[in-house]
Each structure stands twice: as structure tokens, then as C-alpha cells.
Amino acid sequence: MRLSRFNREGIKEFQFQLQKMREGAVIKSPLGIIEDKNFVESVENGPEIIIKLFDSRHDMVAYLNPLLVESSINDDMNDAGLWAWLSAVFIDSVCPSDDNGKRKPKHDYRHIPTSDYRHFYRHLIRGPVRIYRLFDRNLEESEIVLYQHPSVPGDFVEQLGARQERITNPAIIAAANHLYYDRNTKKHKRGAAANWKKPGTLRRYLDLLDQLDLTYDLYSMNEDEILKILPSEFAPYRG
Image 1 (cartoon, rainbow, N blue to C red):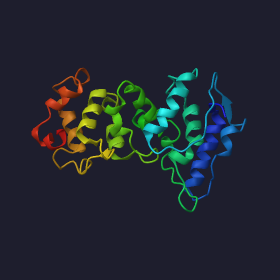
Image 2: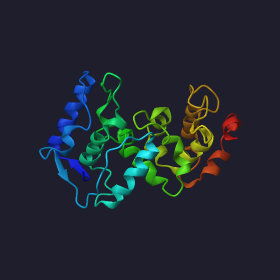
Image 3: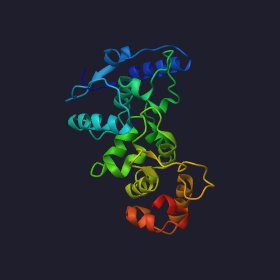
Image 4: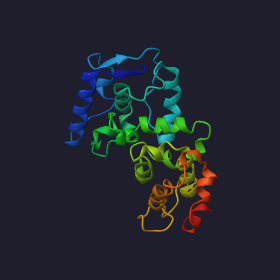
């Protein structure tokens, strides 16, 4: 199967199927619409796509990004038909079924891109691809937002991706990665995602960034410079 995109009717049909999933309908994969000529159009220079399962966001985009770069639309983040089609193709990764065959897709913007910038990084494929490209020279600095299963981004992705000035600032992500990612367990450190009132946690970090942004040009700083200006409450995570 070659890389394709949904046309307008294809997006509508995918929305309809997502709603049926929410209502409890058992919809098996691969979704029949991904190769239906009534709903799909080909992509120029589209490479071959193999349907597979992914254990993490990192594994998913490590497979997809080279294929997208190979195509003629490698930098088009606003191609809603493309990203929606990819979500439908990899539905078992981004919206797996339970033991009864039912799926919980949650909001449409997780599967079909929206023009609302607040939800850009909440698309379960486009978001991690964009992060992957920001850190393509040193992916280890972004593992805090890529280690998760494709279907459950979790609190770190939700909080860091809620505002573009955070998620698009490599130094902010790299510092968060240094503070909260455990390379031994390949997960976030215990207690790091706790309530914002707990010293040194993710929510405290983000709250502090809002304050520091009034004094510092965070976009001009690197990871070490950001870590250096954090108060002592972050010492247990800073290591």
C-alpha cells in the first residue's frame, strides 16, 4: 500500500467511524476506507507503507519519518488528509481495541488534525513526528515525550504540548528530559508528574518557566543554562 491521503469525504467517513467507536461499535482493522478510491487519493512519489504495530511514539516516528521525507510532502504539517489517513492506517497503535474489540478514540483531534494551534501536538502521529524532527540530531534529549505508547501520550506530552513555546523550544524539552526521564527504566522518574504543589515536579517546572520567561529569553538559552537557573527544589531531579 502506498502513502496516500484522505479527500474531504474520506475525512468525514473517518470521523463517522471514530464516532461509531465511541458508541461501542466493534470496528476491526485495517479500516476498509484506507484504500477506498471514493475516500482516498494518492500522494505524489508516495513510498510503500507497511501496516505494523508500534510499542512507543519513538518507534512509530522512526519508521514513518524517513518515508515522509522520501515523499513530496515531507514538510507539510498542515495536510489534514495525510495525517488523518495515517491515523486510520495505524489505528491499532493509536487506538487499540480491548478484549471485546472496542476502541476508545477520545477527541477527534487526536486522529484528525485541526487548525486550532492548541491541539497541534495532540494529534497522535503528527505531534511526535514534529518533535522527532526538532531533535533529529540528538533524539536522546526528547525521550521524555517520545517513550510513551502511541495511544497514551500521558501527562508530560499533555503539559509540555499545551503551549507551542514550550514544545517547540528544544532547550525546555531537553531540560525536562534531563530532570524527569530515567534512562534505566526508560520511563519518567517516580513522582515527577505529581501535583504542581510538590517541589521540583513537572508542573512546578512549567509554572516556573512562565515566571522565568518574564526575565530570560528562553529561546536563546540551552539546556544547561536553563537547568542552572532552576532553584534548589529541583536538585533531587537534576542529579
